Length: 261
Image: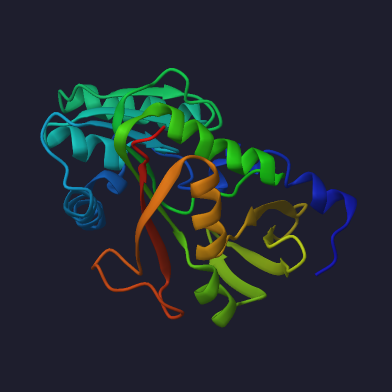
């Protein structure tokens, strides 16, 4: 795939574009009703031994579908996302369901509004967005600083090993009367998965958007966690608790803030 100047522009702060996530979301979205939400929250609660009243921060929470479910179960819940429309949808949904959830717009590199959190979550391949290694590491430093001693960190993203074994460099799909072409290229020097989407409509200019995501291996993640003051505890391959291996679609990591911090 060729990367021209126009293509490169699509990468800058691409995570602010809802086309890369859930699109437009309202408080009535079916996202909140998905049985997958219950499965995820059940697994997190068991893996982290959550107790009622634990303080939970969902980083890159999107429209707050997990945050609201944790609040429903009696936890003190906070959520952070860069997209104000998602935060608004989550706030409206929480108000409708009479849930005391605090959702706010912000950047995951700065979690200074919070401290002494029992649990911090980063779910749905929401790590590795930033251009530099320093910025991605800063997310983990911010997590460490916001956790209470002994607090747990839960991170889930696509397993790089699975991605390499199942790599698709070209796809087409029909969507809303248009053709969306997706081209992927993996930059092995930088460890980044670079993706360009092109929407083709008859009689209209093509719509182009893209993203570049740093795909870390488990070894790299363990090293980064340790350097940030977080101790790696466990890796799972999916939300059914299966062991992590080459065939796992997901890489689910549980870490803990070290007592000596």
